[in-house]
Image 1: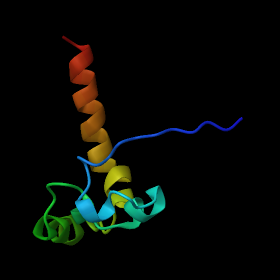
Image 2 (image 1 turned 90 degrees about the vertical axis):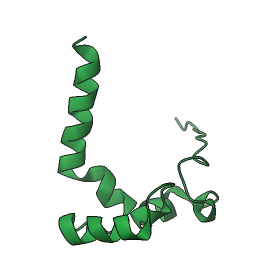
Image 3 (image 1 turned 180 degrees about the vertical axis):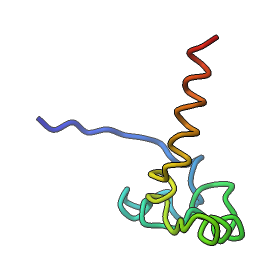
Length: 76
């Protein structure tokens, strides 16, 4: 079974990436995300070795932080 899913990422991405494929977005620098500067992307690379949005999204530190934030919402 195939299911098409549409997601509007226009507010989450820089204008240049709004029409890119998911693979192109995931392979892009974190600077392709709206609000992430080239300097921030360089800092991510220098400090954590993160070169792409894919690496940012699968980074163990960010994953743990995301889980902790989600758990906080369940404990109130």
